[in-house]
Amino acid sequence: MKEHPFAKYIRPLGRGPGRARDLSAEEAQEAMRMILNGGVTREQLGAFLMLMRYKRETAEELAGFTMALREILPPPSLAADLDWSSYASGRSRGQPWFLLAALLLAQNGIRVFLHGASPVAGEKSLTEQGAATLGIRCCRDLKDADKAMQDKNIAFMNLADLCPPLYHLLCLRPVLGLRSPANALARLFNPLQAPAQFVGVFHPGFRTLQQQAALHLRQPAFAVLKGAGGEAERRPEKKCALYMVADGKARETELPPIIEKGWHGDRDYALSDLPALWNGTIGDKHVEATITATAAIGLLLCKRAATPPEADVQAAALWQNRRPL
Image (cartoon, rainbow, N blue to C red; front, side):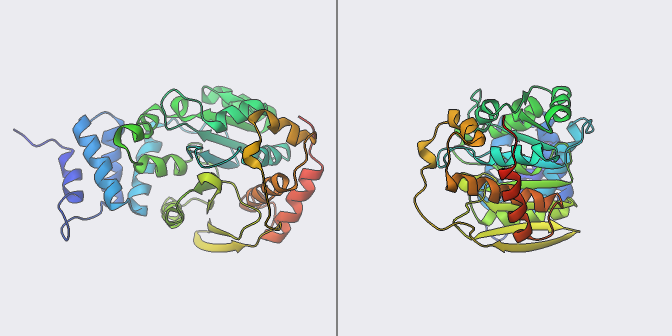
């Protein structure tokens, strides 16, 4: 029996201790190209994803996967300033306060493109539900997203509509029982190739991986942090290690707390409370600090502020002067 063409991408990963090796960016690109085009069997797909999961993907491999993914997407037909991904499962976090930060940036002229998905096929993620509650348009195609961006500088798309092949890979998590490179890839792929990109991860080790992959992809401005529940959301009562890419160089910045530690009841809120928190009907200093601290990172990425302290001050002022929904 003739060997399947995809076997040459599985073999290097599964040779065992001392013999296995990583794929080059070019090999990873071709392997993902075959996966996305349906050129692999189910057995090969499962073996590839789990071997990659076992050894852990490299920045070069992730960059190669991303390049293959971008090949199957149409050329960007709309402009975004900031790409904001949301792929946390939601089991270990409260409400998506980062949506109010994204909305704050959009209300002040920054075009924000949100994308995300639930890891369970057919379910709406907490982010998608929250976006609808806040009046952020949940778009089914890029044409609708273009109109939403023109109207309010912000749009959300479910990955199922944005990129079905990648969504299929993401939804294999309950089948395989483990995350796969699809989880990192969904955060990184920046479908509109916005010049600024904001990513949250749950496990600290993935910050460097995402940062180095962004550097390989020559992403102009990039920031990743260990966010609340794995989302791109800063906890204002804690120090925050921000891994960035700017001007072709990787750097790390530590952001100090901006509010004292203390009780916060974000899990006591419901999605229906998001508009009331925005409009001031409900007041919560911790939630407001979460919103402004997160928005401040967006201001840094989009070069609206030169330093973190300047960004914090500016974000707080924008929050105080926000317009009602």
